[in-house]
Image 1: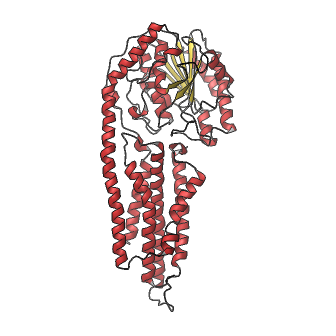
Image 2: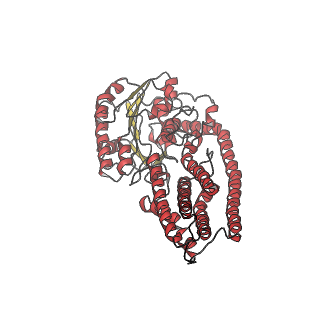
Image 3: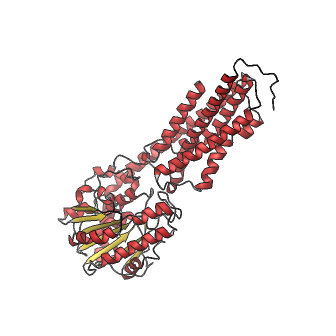
Length: 521
């Protein structure tokens, strides 16, 4: 009974750790939000209106069937923009509108649906006395800074509603207008970026863009088109795969200096550059917390204006640097000391398992032989990780196409492996009829299997540790930790099942004496 309770406690801890890792990437706030530097002075206004189009989930290599998008790139500037890790939608929207990376916004998952308290392009436009408007199939972008949007319209998912409701938003003539498409992302999650469904959604969005362009005057308006992230071929994002971390950036219209694709200085941007660049187009101050730069080579600026903006960007980053440096130092100290503590606990755990095993073995309460150690004990671990790699193939947060379904799949693999473990354990133990010998073999099987299942969890704990993560671990390590903790939970369930079955067998046989000798093989 004590063993069952111990397995239950260990399994509950590991399960809670698996579920808390992804939410633990988020921080409650950003240290930059405490800074209130004075905004920069306005500059010459290059555009009367910037229409910022975000096509959720569109990778830079998936625009071949989007002639409107490609045509705009040929008329203006066609670049690649790089998201940041973790490459989820809400963190990227926060970065695109504030100019601050997820590391310093504290917004690292889609569960952090709170305003980060950072300055944004929408706030700067409002501070300049101009209007802002947003329309789309979700209010994600407006949640980044809800107080800075004058007009927010959330539409039904069907793209036909865009053709009906985008025109009223554009007629507001708000100098900053954001149009948000989520349809491509939905197909990416469901079918992957290499699917015909994904391509069809991208083509339909391109048609909607063509309709939108009929309502713009690119001699006075500017259109900026980008995406928050791309998708894996099999679907999913959040990690650092090349197809996830590369999205298109198209800019055309007033204030844009047309250039051939791949021109020097116009090949690649970062998502943190978008807010300062749109501020420069509208002649307003960039967000005061922005760490990005103005893409001066893409704008119709004189050399003196471009130099002034470059200097202004450097001064802003210099002002923010002490807070950034303190945050980085705190993260490094925490990683060092907690890493040492977790590694020590890991070694103590290994030593504890070893000492308990020897103590039980000396008293003949635990027996190891080639059947229990060589056959039955590895069944769960090999089965669990084998099923995962056979069906999922990679350890990355991008495998988490949706959080709950993948957790469900992890535990599905775990419980399938648990069932296999119980069957093999039953076959190995079935020839042992003496209660003492059977219990000793069961204990040996449980301890050996636990050592194999707990090893990945201990390694994950030593490297990744608990939450929240001031300095987030890499995509592969975070997912490995979730996998290892889920595996340990399921092994505890498997071992508890085997122990419960053995208790049932021994209870049924109580008072019954076997007529044959215990076989040792």
